[in-house]
Image 1 (spheres, rainbow, N blue to C red):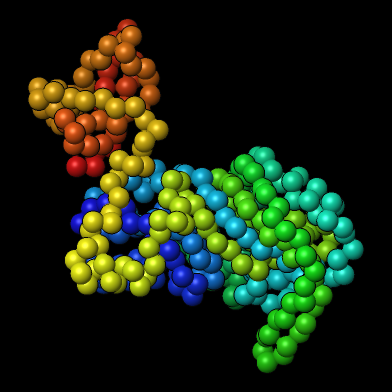
Image 2 (image 1 turned 120 degrees about the vertical axis):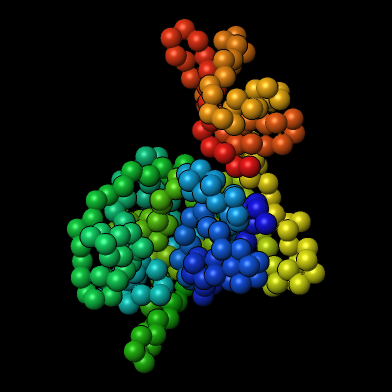
Length: 309
């Protein structure tokens, strides 16, 4: 079984839980995901199965789209609604001020990864240290926020329960669609928007609606995956790995070229037909992998970059 399965991750499961579930369903050990989703988040989680795991490094680089709810007036230690309330504020800003603050984050920005994250420092995951009450110095990361659409802003009351104590807060909520680069923490974005407005904020829910070219409309639920597996129809829902690389042009090899290519020989290509870039390489109609055209001396050559067959 080789290919990509577009999975709808439910709330309450980690991304690795989904991989474990799929290993039990398929009997396939080689499975990886293309970008972690927090346990409380739901949405698109593309899984690479079998030989398709070789494409993970390319899939992880793809941009993402999220629908998120930002709650203003409350900040938490985890930057989302699963955490402990650190501070609460009266939200004294109007809708226009909120929109202006949000749009100031569009573009190339620096973002400090949260302590409650799976990033490793010194061999330990940050969330493990955070649970011990430690705060470790982290380096900010450069990310891209391509666009933010403010869908709706409204007043609401928010209830938090912690250690048997129930607290109710007056808050303002904002529904957002965020298009961003890999490595973006939406809960940190929500926290930072709250800080910029001076009233604090956290992410109260998150749905990933798109990862690369895989979207919510075509994602399979856990229940659908079980049903398809029981009827031996799951493999028919695997997407071919070459779908990831549709932005690249195609080079087709004849029998002689294929033999050389498979044995690591550089193939000379026409200068007026190709350029220095990456191509999808095919044997007739069968996808082999990615090839790279490069110049050496005054000649262009094609060499293998990644095999998938």
